[in-house]
Image (cartoon, rainbow, N blue to C red; front, side, top):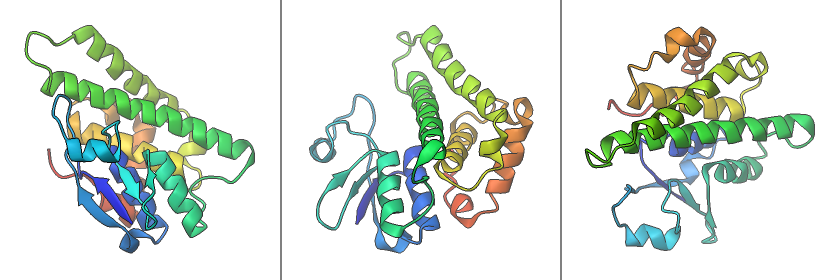
Length: 203
């Protein structure tokens, strides 16, 4: 299998963590890809019109996206337990993950607004609104002991990627001081090899 990825992408990191946990990391060829707003990448657009990372190309040539669907595919392939099979736990995990993905989307848009949009065209209120979505999302999970102390699953993987991306791109945001339970959770998760080795490079 081939996975398009960037070491800076929290979405690709999510898949890397899952692949390690499921024992599939050696079955995946990681193919670096560069995507950025306002920058053409016709080759990658032919793989996925959305031009988003990551994308998994299976051994049969099927294209699978997005990160959650890729994790679900790998989890099924390995007979894993990263995504609950049925019942209320499954829907809670999927809902948690939807919130986490939205937080990551908002953080990425804040990053683009600051670093990519030309000076003079930046919209501060829009950026503040998206950052508030991520910040209040952290507050939500700060008060969810069933996620912070539960079994290692897609919710915990996604939350690790949120907090790691905050460290990577928003190092001065102060999330550790504001959310000590998330800080303790993150420190505990860094003891897992899959989490530790997938930390993005220094910004």
